[in-house]
Amino acid sequence: MRQLEAVVAQPPGSAGSTPQNVELRHLRYFVAVADAGTFTEAAERMFIAQPTLSQQLRRLEDIVGAQLLYRRREGVRLTTAGSVLLETSRAILSLVDHGVSQTRQAAGLGRQRLRVVMPPRLPDALAVETASRLMSAAAAANVDVTWVEVPLDNEFSLIHQRKADAGLGWLPGAGEDLPAPLDVMSLGEFEPVLWIPSWHPAAGRGTLTVEELTRMTVVYGPRRAEAGTYDRWSGVLRAADPGFAFTDPPFRHSLPMSVAFAGNASRPTAVLTSPCIAMGSAKAAAREQQLTHAYDMVEVSLERHPLVATAGLVWNTDLPRPLQQILFDVADGLRPRSPRMSWGRDLLLAHADMLGGAVQAADPGHTGQHRERAHVGTQALSAVQRA
Image (cartoon, rainbow, N blue to C red; front, side, top):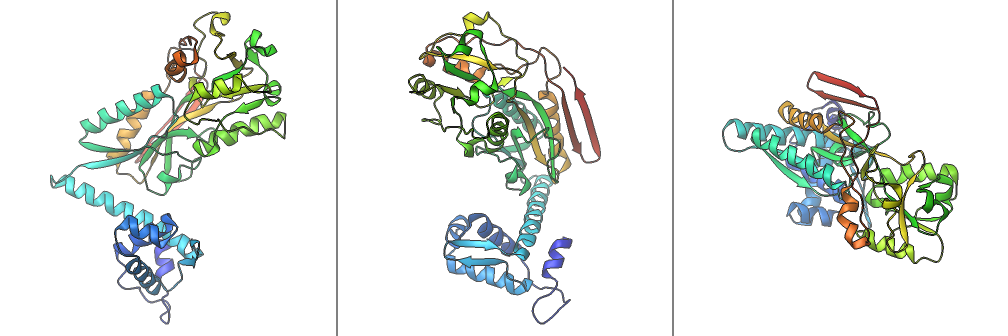
C-alpha cells in the first residue's frame, strides 16, 4: 500500500494531493495489459472493447499522474512507475479476491479456493500423491482446488505474481532462498535416467563419468519445459567442458522415440530424462539384468550423481492462514522421513514395454540431507534430515 501511495500521490498540477476515483477495475485492466503485452490480447481476455480498455488505462494514468506504459507497435512495456504499480496492484487484487471469498464463505454463499500449479514432466508418483493428498485435505476443509498445468520458472513467478496460490516444482539450489512472499517445503531430491549406446565402453560397467558424457551428443530439453533444471545441469556439464550444450529431443513427449533416434545416430548419443528417480533408490536386481537392450541403448548411472533436482511445494504467504495450513500439512506428509521412502521409477515403468526392455523397479534407499522451512502465520518449522 505504501508503494501505491508513493506512485499516486502526485497527480499533475496538484503535488501532494490525494488521487481520486482509483477503482479496482482500473487495476484489473492495468494488470491484464501488463500480463498480455498488448491491448488487443488484454481486451480479449477481459471481454471488453479495445478502445474502452485503452481509454480506461489513460484514465488511470491521469489519476496516478504518471505514464505507466510505453506504447509501441510491437506491444507495451512498463515504465518504472508502472512496474511499482503493477506489483502493488497484484497484491491489492489478491487481498480483495481472498477477502470476498472468505466473506462469501462466512455467509454460506461460497467456498474458498486454491489455485495450484502442477507442471508437466513431474514424476508421476510424486504428482499423483501430492494431488491426492491435497484434494483430500481441501475437501475436508471445504475448499475448492483449481489445477493449472503449465511450466514453472526458477522464480515461481506465477505464484509470486499471485496468478496462482501454490505449485509443485523443482527448487532453485537448496530451495531455501525463494523471494518473499513465497514459502516452501522440499519433498526430496531426484535424479534423471541416462541411456547410452550399448557398444559404449561405459555400458559394460553401468556407470559413466561427466567427462565421458560431455564428449557425447546429449538429448535433453527443451529448455522452456524446465528452465531451472536445464540451466543447473548445463552448468554442471559445462564445468567439465565449457563448449557443452544439450540437444533438444526429436519428439518432446516421447522418451521411446528419443531413445530410438539416439540408437541410430551417426555419433555417440545419450538420452537424459527429466528428474524422476528418488535419490538413493537401491537397485532391485543385478546390474547385468538392468542393462536390458532397447534399440541398442542401455541405462547407466552417472558417477557421483552430479545431476539432481529438489522437488518442493511452494505457496504464497499472503494466503489466508487456513489455506496455508492445508498446504503445510500436505507437504509435511509428503516429505521423505526414513530410509524406506522412495517415489520409485514410474516414468520408465510407463515406457518399459515400448522400449522393448523390462525396467526393474527400485527399492527405497536412503534420503539425502534436506533442510526445509515453512511458516504458517507465526508458526515456524525447521527440520534437517540426514542420510
